[in-house]
Amino acid sequence: MRSPKILFIAFICLLFVTLTATADTIKLKNGTVVKGKVVNFNNNPSS
Image (cartoon, rainbow, N blue to C red; front, side):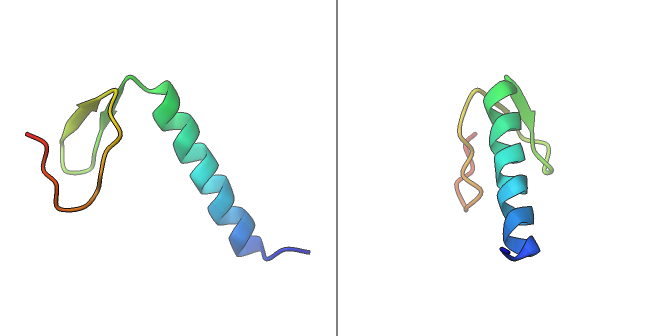
């Protein structure tokens, strides 16, 4: 048996990828709206 934590993380990653792949516009927690882009959550503000 694999660790449930590993499976949970894998499920969340898969869900996140699915949502980001199907969504045209993604609104982030800080209010930034990104259209059809891969977002980098580091200190890279894309104005």
